[in-house]
View (cartoon, helix red, strand yellow):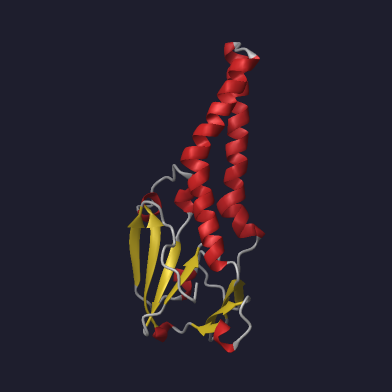
Length: 185
């Protein structure tokens, strides 16, 4: 993989589309098209077709949509004001909400003790993703001073490639939700 230098990572529409909006479109299209196909093939009544549609949306909401929204909101909450800047000789995280000097956190490889990548089971094992939220993950950067910084895939999904000299610990999680909150994200 080619490592891009002089890049600014932030939560933008393309990342939201990749990890959230595409799945909503798929769910809507499947939820509408399957009952219509059954209606045409099996000559079902309109009321049965509408019940199938509603049942499908209820099922997908409980098992797919709600977990996806919870993770998406969690990641957005923790990273929405941040930008990760990768330059030729420097890497740093900027908090755009905070305008004081502490809003810039330098991230040289030498200051990062370990990166914990919190991945879903299927992403960890590189298997087929059955659940829409299986694509979502986050990285926890543990600095030498034991400060923790959380960077979700919505902010930067190529983080590991930018820190090749830092040990990466892959952690298998059923539901990779950012739980610990501190002043860095």
